[in-house]
Length: 143
Image (cartoon, rainbow, N blue to C red; front, side):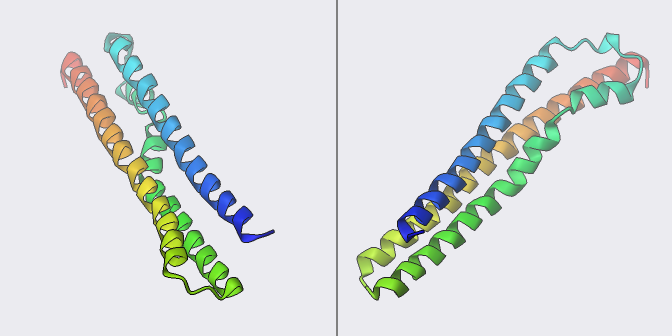
């Protein structure tokens, strides 16, 4: 397998994973927001059951937020390794090819951070909504 094929696999593999994870996070956030708008706390007799339903899938968003930068960093490491491998094979110590390879590699970290930051926001926003609903439930129950 030549380096161009590896480069494409790394680029589309890492970027594909990060894009898929961001789609998953946004989909869950939309579903949770809709659920929070229509949930009726009066239908619940148990705070634990309400909390279970309110926090469903929130751990996925927080996991994506925590791991997206590492996935991006993994892509960066692979990109740098590929750049050095190409330099070693060709013996071409051209600044242009080195900088192009490093820019490609750093793009993965940037995308990983770009996925993580909105996921942190979404997780915090949704967690706040859960706390509000639980506070309303506690008030309703007289706790």
